[in-house]
Image (cartoon, rainbow, N blue to C red):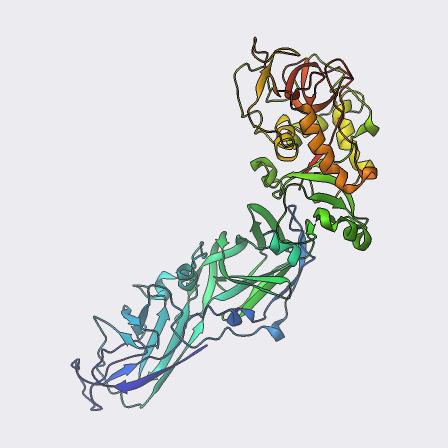
Length: 583
């Protein structure tokens, strides 16, 4: 609550808690502007972090997983004994409009006054005291042109700005014994709305990768409108609406980030649902029963984000060439090559994939996988070859990758292997016999388990193989050529796009990179030394080019590195499977 003193002072306009008077005679009449006036000194909603740490209704939640959408019921416990008032005693925090309403008695229209940082009120059209007797002054912030008892009060639905938050924090004051002869007429402003505070706590591994710092928070379940009694008591009315909260601050101490969000609502009993947005992902937490939100009280909900998506061995960033490692506890570690031995010794971390991209597709970001992609260090399917599908009579995907004789790099920028894989995996006809390549990639989870916070293993898109070649395989150009035959790249274009004569170079670079983990942890890529020896290796992609053909990438027997091979029947059984994951 606010203590406001109305003190006689000369040469100022009369007002709210700041009323102008003339003399103490029984018959006062209209005063002149040069006569005595009363000045208001008080406070308004402070935006200092310490003010947000008031305790009220206590919400107890299970730790929130920051990397998948959480929907569930969480416990709420009302602790009236610990619910404390929201106190602040200055007007300096008001952002923008500082107009305050002053009403004389119950039946008059309010006067408009403006308050400065120290509580002094002035008005272009002030009220002049006309009696020496006691009279009633009512005042409230924010200003309204009609009495609140007639118009009611509605908080802002979007309180994400400080100005709109303050417009929603109704302050009300009544003094029934204002008198011109008093040396000080005290008015006490109180918060007529309730304050909801959301405190989000996240650990180092989360906030360093921006996984635990909310970008916005909203909640639903509260009524925003209210009727107002002549004494300034709010009664919530109407239907519930969504409210956007104001981000108060975020700080880091002892490897823990703490972020506060705040909003005001009319006093009411309500069951609220929180929507916490972190990097465009939505996480929810709901109260299991109604809580009581009291005028002038702070009501806090603490959300702990302490389940990290990935841990990093050193530094604050993930880089191409780092290794994705699994641990027996299910944690995921991104390990720099120099930290591999330490990670194995201290965390039992096993390298299972190599990072080839530190960004992900828009679709994968919506799934919560925003940090990157990694390629498995070993072949799936126990290193055996298999068919894309045993059925080559119908299209599977809604998006096909047909032959294209002209260059179309959109094929190679398409990173949605997970999406294409799950078109097959989620198909009712999916099984290990009908779609063996997809099964081999998906089932790799049983052989090499990875964190449930990742996409888990899947058959990659052609674009993801393309990224592997030029980011890890050091392809000396991103230019692709249309393949026409073993020894010619200038004849009739076929739509088979490749890195001409770069298969040995790319395979050597990939193998050199993977060899950093030790030979027990990776399967090297094989490539024929020339077109007469060996066959090279080809790997299935999750894309298809027609009802009968699947897309593949691989080290061709003419030394070309084929990125976009399309003339391969889905039932062809001599292609390998290398699984990928998003995290």
